Image 1 (cartoon, rainbow, N blue to C red):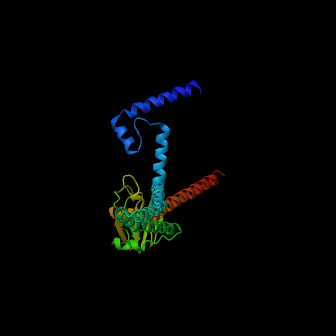
Image 2 (tube, rainbow, N blue to C red):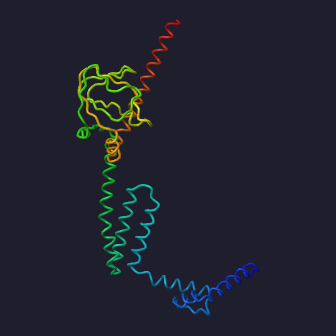
Image 3 (tube, rainbow, N blue to C red):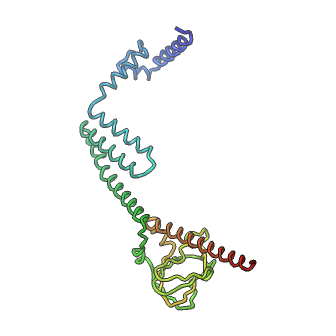
Length: 268
């Protein structure tokens, strides 16, 4: 035997001998069915293997599988598979409780099943709503009950560029003009939504009423509550603001192209 292996073996033997001199460790060895005065690593390994084999029962197998699913939940990053794995783990632990006649364990995991099922159903509904919104259904008719009616006459200014922004508006009737870009807004359009997203909540344009009309308003505080409560509206709002920004970019590009063409014609 190489001298290195002998040295390591002797070191381990001395550590084991010193450990057996400890009363607490000796007591543990006695409880395991080992003699503290005559204990070896092979004896410890064989005894642990024997205990493990005797502990493998049909009920404990269910507990081991259930524990595996619960550990898997710690590695998952999304909620839907996490809930599914948790439910499967609860089933295995409930069966373990039933087979081992452990009423507390059985009832605990049996009660956890409907709770996880309810949360899973809620998550699937949220995913369905988000997918439904992504497919293009952008109706916000359901938002109207949360809004307040307001009327404007031709010539009224709804708000000016740089004003503090505290509410969003939905046009019902009439016509309105965004003065900075000379764009008319008709019924069924949202106004003032970009102020909700700006860091200092300031108006990004001036809107004037050019034809008597009616609008519905909702405060940003109430809008924020709905934004976090309903993912469909949250997704809608993101799409809406993205479309508005893309429209503004397209409009600026067209204006720039028109100005370049006019400059070219003048030079020619």
